[in-house]
Length: 50
Length: 254
Image 1 (spheres, rainbow over the protein chains, first blue to last red):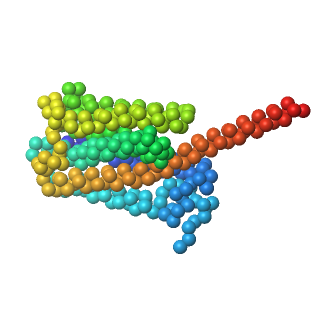
Image 2 (cartoon, chains in turn purple, blue; image 1 turned 90 degrees about the horizontal axis):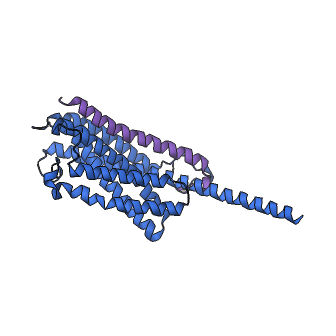
């Protein structure tokens, strides 16, 4: 395969950035949810929450 | 079937829908990597460097989509003062900055083997995309300022609408200034892609889109929770100030 270095950098940074953002947004959600009173976490009281 | 009591609300932002979307993203990514690296054929001119199209073009399309949603959310804030739309605008801007950054980065990496340069200041699409990126960084900077929630939302909405003017310019730049760009016209519509290459590219767009929806669900909920915290802190501060004022008043009466 030609240009393997460019491919690995381009794909690696793309998937890495999306993965890091996903982890970060989940962490932020957990931290914030732990501090907000339960009666203000509106969507979490629906049947969709599990 | 019973609805969980509010007091039993779990400490996270996921839901059944977001879980299903998350699984779809992971499955789609595996398929995209397999097809992108081993399924799609190499290009006659670019050889294997063409495989960067499968991350570059989806990132570019999701940049347009995310910033368009931010523009709509900003209009809705200015028009209706809708906090819901303001949170949507903010979350989508954050994702749009990531997609736009990836567009610039993967384009630069792709440009080196195909155009023999990482960057060309004379290329209108590159420069207008960079301006869009910097404008939306500015949007997030305005968002991070402290102060009145409503004023910040209004200021950032104005920045978003200024940035949105640049969206059609970025998109049409390869046609309006066709002699001042290294870019080709739309990869999706020019009809030059082979079947499996086109399929893999469309798969990349679908996977990136599902990721965007998944991330927006979580990001909206994070935004909501963080707003509740700020509002809650403000309410607490007002109550304390009132209590202090009341105590001072009692002391003055004695």
